Length: 610
Image (tube, rainbow, N blue to C red):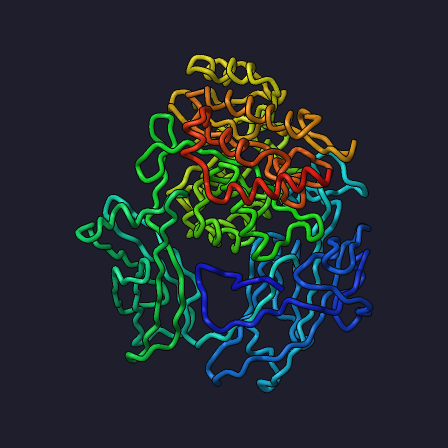
């Protein structure tokens, strides 16, 4: 299967994927408590969830728990080395046994966890058995679930559930003293990178060597003695005296320059653990109502991306993730808002490498309780810690459209939760803007993010065409039927205003099923309507960015720029030019990409088939 190293920011050369065929059992009422009680009567293809076609099961009934079991071979290791079992994501609560002995438990369906299983291996035997119980109550609305359906049939904007293992399971062997976690924080003003490293194991007479490379050339190196298991070190980079390094080293969507890093643990002068990572010199900040990337105003051209595939649901291969990013860029966007999903770290790797900005958004719960507060906080913290080292991420969104925080206009409790998540996010990462509640009913936020699905371009211009109109809209309009600002003092801070959901034009020529916020009856009309909407948005100069809904059709929603199979609904070159705000032939010719011919060919082939 096409899955690569699951943790791109901390890679070791030796690892073992445990994806593949596992024994499986449904436990609809969660009756069993130990794998010995379970009749494993089926097979499943991991990491695809049982609801997906690719899993081999395509199960649609409600089920409170499922079980997995498989036997694997332990890689040969030295006596002092540790064997670590990793799960990239299991929805929602995972309980793990190794050789029949309980090993660990994790709650949270969208974030990774690991367990050291060295002591669970019997006499360092070559084979061992893993059993997994995944508990995921299908109708519980106060657990973070994103777009996962809770009814028996899909409705509105909710899609098939994802139960159990849905990202890679893997194994690695590490030295007794090894690097557990890394974070690089760039600082363009001092032209330096701050390293935070966490190690496990004894660190007496231990040092860490850090080597930075750009385009295969070493640009910095440092070695420092460890005093304990945490190291914080600032490394200054060359100041631009050779090859105009400042211009060449900064990261942007147009120039996604990464800095490769090799870190080596030295004990008594000898290397014991070596890991590969990367970072980038990239800074985002807000100033005078604008979003700045590396001190330059940057107009965000985002597309809403829900990260679903027809046969595999939320799980995608390396090829599929990379293709989606290339298609997104090809359609003229410089970023995505990953909607209601903590995407695979491999997606973020390709966004880093190919140059695509990402807004990361926490999957919502839909009811407010002490449990939802605990789970939202825990999972969001784990997501932030996993992903804050990725250069591509430029904003965090803990809450969307007041989902999971009902009655914001009336009740103090949900307001305090939004505020708490905003400030918690800022405490864990002060280098990126945080959107407290994307869409409306905004109480605290660094960006005023508005959702407006009017299909009339003139209404867009009327609401956002100049500064006074934007001010009037924020004060008085209710585009989604909801008040936009609950705290009007936000208007005093000259925050950027962005249209972070709009459009949603449906075009589905072979079916009357599905829906969008407006509808086109032909590919030509679809492209024409998209172009007119985007021209209106580009005419609204006070807006510092937008996010179009959406990249692909997603089950009953037929409002993607692409069909579910990732083929185009309209001429991709015309769509890309509209996305970029290109209006004349000279601009279009300057913008033409050699790949256009190939993509137009794919589009025309699609038109013949519909």
